Length: 358
Image (tube, rainbow, N blue to C red; front, side, top):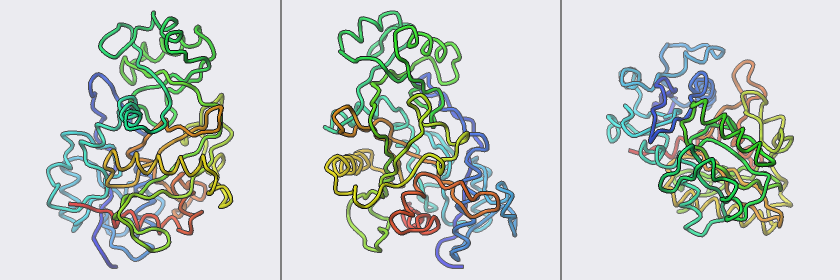
C-alpha cells in the first residue's frame, strides 16, 4: 500500500434546516459510493482505512465511517491521515474540528452550505456573466426576493417567461421534487404540493424550461492531474455527458434508473462545436467562482437557439462506480465522463485523492 491513509465518510447526520430549507438525505447516506471509492482505491494499492480489518466488498458499511464526531475520531484512531468527505457538509459539521489536522478530500463545509442554495448560486453565476436558466423564488407569502404563489400569473407575464416551466426545491438532491409544468393550473398544483409537504421547506424555485439537449459536466480543481498526466493552474472539465430518455422533461433519479441506461459521453467530433466549447468554458469559470476544492458537476441544457445554459451546480456529486459485486451498472455520470477521456473509475478517484487539502 502507498500514499496517504484515507478513510471514507458517509452521511450519518441528519441534514440541518438552513434558512428554513432542507436537503433530503440520500438513503444509505452515500455509503454505497463510499464503499465503491474505497474498493477501487484499494485495488490501486492505496491505503484505505476501514472500520473492520478485512471489509467484505459486498457490505458497504464495512468500508465507511459515519460523519459524526465519533466516526471521524474512529477513522483517525484507526490510522487515517486523510478524510474523504463523501457526505453533504454544512457549517458546524464535525469535520470542522479536524480541519488543519488531517487532509480532506471534499469542499469546505461553508462552501457546500453556501452553494447548495441552487437559486442563490445561479443568480451569482448569472451576475458574473455566465449563461444561466432564468428563475425566481416562490412561497405562500411574499418577502424580500420571494414572490407569492397567488401572484405568479402576473409575475410570469411581467418577466415574459413562457410555459412550460420547472418547479423544484431550492436545496434539492437529484431530481427529487422536480416537476415540469405546462400551464398555470399545473404550476399551482406542483408548487402547492411541495409547499404543503414541507419536505424541502416552504420555499421553492420556478425556472424556465430549456427544451434542447441536456449535458452534465464534471469539473476538477487544479490540484488534480489531468487524464493526460499533465497538470495546470486552472480547473478543468472532463468530457460532457449527454442525458437522454428524460421522463416528462426531467432526468429520472439515479436511484430509480441507473445513469448508465440514459447517459453517454459525447464523441470527440462534438468537442469542437461552438456551443459545447462555450458550455465547457462557462462550467470551468463557475468552478472557479465557487472556489471548488474538489470535483463538482454542473448540469446544462440548450435553449431554443442551441446555446447551453447552466441550471444546477452540484458541490457533492454522486461518485458511485463499477467494481464491487453487483455494481456493474453503477458508474456515476463523472465515471462515464472519465472513461471517455481515458481514465478508469479508479484513475479518476486517484486524481481526486490528489486534491486533498489541509
